[in-house]
Amino acid sequence: MLMTDRYAVAGNPVAHSRSPEIHALFAAQTGEGLVYERLLCPLDGFEATVRAFAAAGGRGCNITVPFKFEAHALARRLSPRARLAGACNVLRFDGGADSGDWLGDNSDGVGLARDIEHNAGRPLRDQRLLLLGAGGAAAGVLASLIERGPAEIVLANRSLDKAQALVQSHAGFAAEHGVKLRASPLDGTGEGFDMLINGTSASLAGAGVPVPAAALKPGALALDMMYGPAARPFLDWAAAQGFEGRDGLGMLVEQAAEAFFIWRGVMPESAPVLATLRQRLEAEART
Image 1 (cartoon, rainbow, N blue to C red):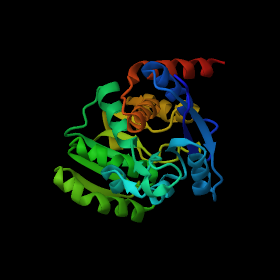
Image 2 (tube, rainbow, N blue to C red):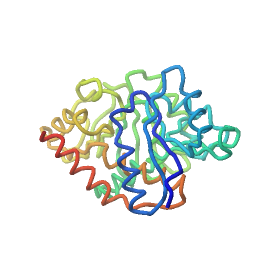
Image 3 (spheres, rainbow, N blue to C red):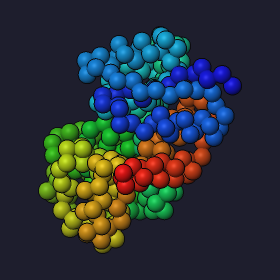
Image 4 (cartoon, rainbow, N blue to C red):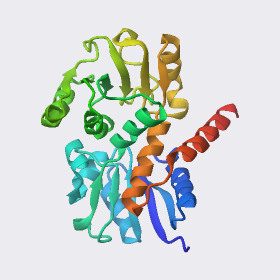
């Protein structure tokens, strides 16, 4: 099959992204003909870069930091989950370079939920979740977490007003699903949480975990959306506290599988790709 369909991950930075590896493995597994690239966008040139890629034959993009909100504004058609999140990490260029038909979607939340429930074996229903952050990462996953029926989600952020705005936008959705949802400052979250999900940039900045260990139950799941060396301090902290530490590699692979399905209409098997990627990261860490 001729490999003519082009896709890319668009962001700044993107040199570190493992998405090209993931989608190459998905393509080989499913027999889909595509190539997947990295698309470095100037901080003030996201729209122009993505439009040029679409005009040159690109079929879609994954969107990473810091452009998920811009992607949401650029897409003329939005999936319900993208509309609720106010952020997109997937664009599908229906209609080619004419953005009037582009679809914006968000696969982050379903990717995170699948990783927690299927890969980590932790059900979300009736659990108490502490979600850190109120930016694009937290916005992208909140609706999918609510859909899984936890008892409570506390959204904690350094800027309380941003957390409150995100809670307000999801208040009706949470009520429909019987989920208690509230905003909190980082130093007032309360205790007894079954899961901690870190959606802040603290790990990228080399900062410590922004909430005390006392917020979590013994044996709680502590998940950082980062992976690789950036997540190591968080995982070390989790292990020292007796929590089950997990990085964001599984979420990365699962959200990529959902994006692949959005673009191609084929759902790849994520487990062998996650295992391969984990082996590669471990080998790199030893060198």
